[in-house]
Image 1 (tube, helix red, strand yellow):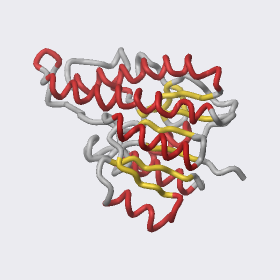
Image 2: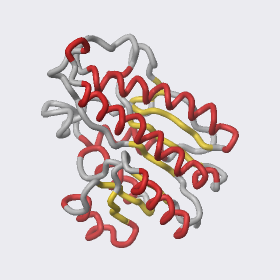
Image 3: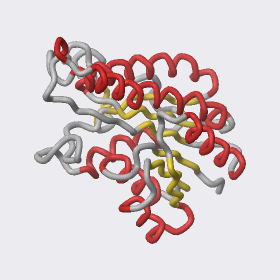
Length: 233
C-alpha cells in the first residue's frame, strides 16, 4: 500500500493535535506543524513512532513553510492531505469600530494569509497524487449572515478563509484536489473555552474532509460531514 502523507498546521494542542492523532490512528505519516516543538505534540512520537513527525512551523514565516515543503518533497515526492488548522484571536472583547488593528492584522496573517501560503507551497505536492485533499478549518462565525459587531478579527478572518476556500477549489479542481472548509463547531479548546463539545468530536469532521475519496464533495462548507451554508453557518 502506498504510504499516505498528511500535513497539519497548528498542531501543538486542541483541534490540530487531535486531528493529527486521528490521522495517525488511520496510519498516515503526519507532519505536525507547531510553533515550538515539545509538549503534547512531541508525545505523539512516543506513541506512534516515526510516522509522527513534529516540525517547527509558523505559517506566517515563509522560511518555515518552505523548509517543510522541501522536506516533504524530498522524503515523499507528494502529499495526500493538507489541513490548514492554525488560527488565533477569538476576540470576543472587541467590536469592529474600536478594534485593535494589530490584533486584526495578526489574525489575518495567520488565519488567512498563513493558510494561503501553505496552499501555495504544498499545491504541487498535492497535485503529484492522483487524488488529494486540502482542508481549511474555518468557523460558522465567518458565515456572512452570522457576523455581528463582536469578535471582528476572528469573524472577518474566517469569512476571508471561506472565500479563499472557494477560490482554491475552483483553481485546484482540474488537478484532482478536493478543497473544502470545515467548521468543527464550538469545541472545548483553549481558544473556544470550556463548555463546548469534546475536541475529538470537532476533529472528527476535519478528518472526514481530509480522507474524502474521489467521489467526495468539493468546494463546500461542512460540519460533522454535513453541508452548511456559507451565509448562515
